[in-house]
Image (cartoon, rainbow over all chains, first blue to last red; front, side):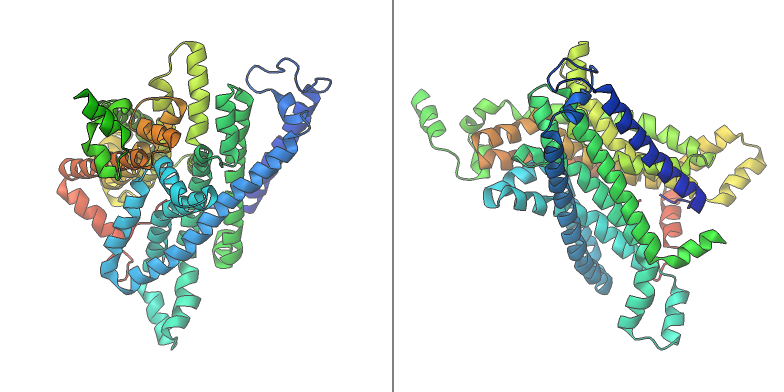
Length: 261
Length: 254
């Protein structure tokens, strides 16, 4: 999606408003559950905040689940990035391989995640199975965006680089990769956010990060756990999305200058 | 005859093909055509609803150049909402409100899954519609509404169909998750396989879902080729290759 970058003031205002909203909400919720024991009747028919804020083991559980969810997101995206870079390099060097490569990646994309987790657990530990399966889902997005990014570098820029006497490797590292970076980073963002959503399904093989909360909540008909699991994965996605955007801004200072002008 | 069936059921299948060919292994899982039909029906209903919601919204927003940043954020965050969570919440609420277990919770969660790719692709395509064509349409005297429906939407169709195919594949490949919550459909084979530790039943379920996803993808591709007028298809190919070195290899996924 093509986006116009907002001004710096707008961006800081949006971030500040978000953080402020979360802080106000937490203060309000803690206030609301004051004086309630963890197992009293509901403070709220949908989400029982006392389970979130008063139960002594909740923070530890949530911390462990956050770490698991992060691991199950970061490892597949990192592995997918390494693999996709290699595949994209092959596709760019030997152009006829692009169609078969994306066809294979596209085929992997159609395999139902639930089934892939289930089949792989026969050969691997649940954690390994989850990482392998999630990696396979990042390939299509990453390969296509890396190839599109490098392929989209204008011919004139390449001629200029050649004219300056750059070697093929030097041109790739100092000219093509930086110019391709916005498209590549967009791919990494979509892959990361999609993976965060998919991690929940690993709850079916006794993993899951926040997905564990969701399945557990469903099995015990405890709505609060499902809601907390869903909200936390969305928050995690927003946080990682912001993180990747800021990394992209640091890595592409020229784009920032263009906005400032 | 009964004795033979008992013997067959007693010796488990040794590969996934035996699971398909020997009926006794499948006896406890329900008929395949029925489960395929359920999966196809849920997915198709979800896709149609998602198109009805996402496409008009994206066309109008992109036409008036409104809400670009907000839409981008919502779409990207929408991808992170776990379908299992929506499904769990929807099932509980639906049961409590008396709408029953099937099919509304399943369809609702699949609609939410299909919205981001559909919206993002339609929005990008309408934004990128040839400005001179839009200006020409206005000069001829078309109303804003007619510009949207008769100029921008047709020009956006090739990219819209790419989004539709992505959405279809995701929806079909995700529908089996409903089985974890007790629904029927092709996911039932995977659920039972997980429960019985039956690798071949899991594999069979996976194969069937993959086959349905590929068929959906191919039939939508074919629909696109038939529906979209050839000049627009060629135009889309040409404009995506502008500024490219030789010939465009890939389109970035937005």
